[in-house]
Length: 269
Image (tube, rainbow, N blue to C red):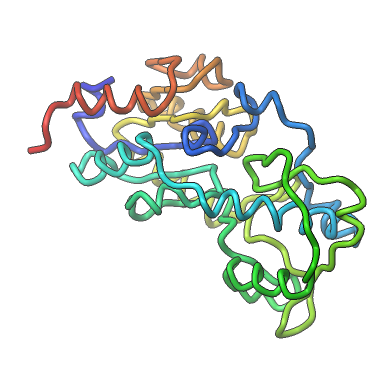
């Protein structure tokens, strides 16, 4: 794997597994099996005021956990590989912003980012920090503690705490606010998908980090690379949907594995 990476033009496709060492659970690995709630769907969010209240109450707490997370050795290793000129691009399925926080440049956020909010009425994007301030004011005196936080920033809360939570709307047009992420049941913007396909086609290799590739959103790029005889290497804990397409497989935690990979590559030149 180090020999392939050393040839350069590596495109990284990362998933929730790269962020578990930062304290953010994944969807389907060991921490994912402890999930106690199904993720919000786009259809439920736009179709039900009760569903939106449930989402924002839980996310109001969960966001604080995501915002406090810091990059781990896996994120920093990707940044180091980019600084060595070996990475052509990074596609992440994560919404936590930790690749960017570690210094990686030009990250394509396939599913968007939790640090932004979009109005479904006028389309304006604002920072999540601003929304957090508004929700704190609107819910003065509301006290809750998150029992569990999921990788999408969704915290597990009792129903009575959800029912007493106040939701706020867009300051500009009064429209519904939604995190600037792709919910389950929602399509990734076509332009973003095409950008990822084009990046994959130019790759010397596709390096999958911490993704089970269960959903087509990321799996399609593995199939796209394999169909063009571009080597696919996967580092993940547990089997993935893309294993049959992989030239190399490594079942290992991301931090130690990428640290070892950097060691194999030797000092930067």
